[in-house]
Length: 310
Image 1 (cartoon, helix red, strand yellow):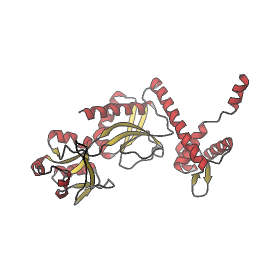
Image 2: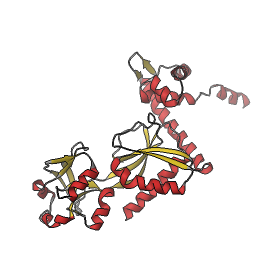
Image 3: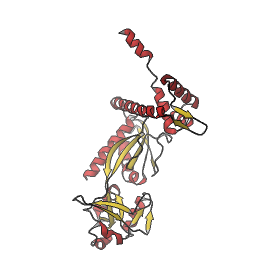
Image 4: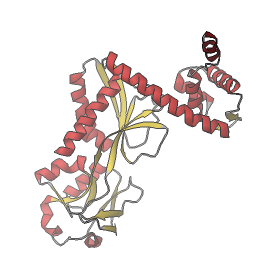
């Protein structure tokens, strides 16, 4: 038995090299991988070379302009991300038992959701965890988490990047709203087809802002293409225009729910539902989750649950 154990030990690989390899694949560059990991390019190159020697396989094709994966490299990268994800989960579980939230939490969120939900929640977080500082960056572009030295990104809608760790915090409804001051002018709108002749404010931040799918309570689906002579690329600005009677607009519930409750805005066709989107807390696949990140994500999850109940 001792001999068998010794043989297994001699074949043990340095698992740290998986993170070096994954960083090169994800950034497409040894230089960028080194910047991400906080080491020199020579260290990254050496670690990846040793990994290839251990595996007796070529994982990366290097040339002067880019680095790409071989077929073996693509297969191995898929396994690497799985292993790194599991390691992240293990460290996260232990950190939640042994650490309290401290340090600076750096995160990014979309401008509208960040203003309406995240910024007020940050104030609650700071009161509960006074040993934490927070840097919140608002913007609608998808920032590179590692390049920007960010701990967390809040993303809204539908995720496409499978190389990131995403935890769903909640969801949001898209609602068609108009100004409460002119509510009588919407009485004739009883079906999505009636919207064609109604002024509509298009959200230029969307890929197809005039095409919407409505679903009735009975499950009937109607595709409507609306008409617009006003386009804006900011949801809060669209809401301001709606309040002034510029037209109807589709906006997320987290932005309009207080105004609907007060009567400043009204829901149009409330019996018809638009597609719902998700609210996600996103982390880099190879970055371990600190207690401060877990604490804020849990706070956001509870806040979203309470908001949806309200």
